Image 1 (cartoon, rainbow, N blue to C red):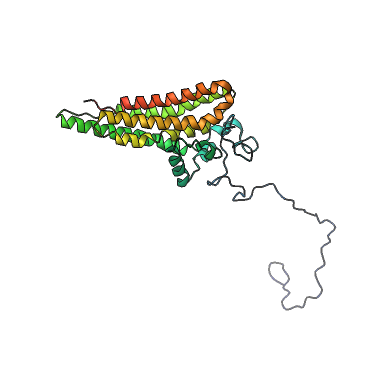
Image 2: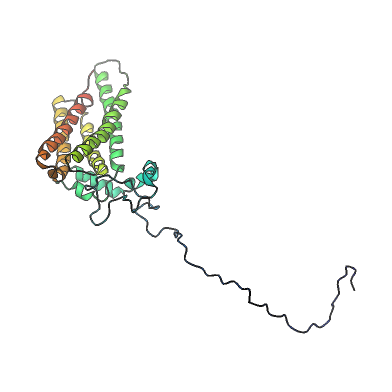
Length: 283
């Protein structure tokens, strides 16, 4: 006998077996499939994982995939209208490869094809337009500063850097590629020829690419040459936009001619403004 009141069984032989536990109170547990999503998601959309859908492009008959529901439709868009104020909602519009952007830049240099909207209908992007405008602002400031500096040095005059050149360029390019497509969107909607808003942003953004090499050529100190460069660039840009919208705007009835003519002339007006304020050197 141990001091703690326990029995020391020592080397005693224990016989018998442990009785089985009755299963009368056993509870049957059945597992069912949960609705949890697997990770990583099996239905990843686009090249960027996460599957965030873009906001609905209202009246997007101009940027709707050919064989399915429009991008960002109610069936695939979660979170309601508040989702449009999140960064993830616009991520798919920046989901393009370098090859995609290069192909679209090349397409903008061939304005008479009029196939840009067909090639970008299922995947309009904002990546290219953003960087085209940003590059134009930098080129305009750099080329303008360089040309005015050389002109002042040749005439032995004091030169001061004009910071307003950057702010003015930013206002022109960002404002033009934002406000003009927005106004055109409501005009087309009024004439019962609705177009995708993002598609219009994409089209107008790439239409400005031709002005980058035009600005680089403006360093040539010949005024007539600068007018020719500005005119050619404006004509190519205006033709690119007008021809790509023509096939869609014809559904607006007899007014389509006026709309296309207005689009063409407005693009030419942009070229004239750029010539007067960016391609002109005053000492």
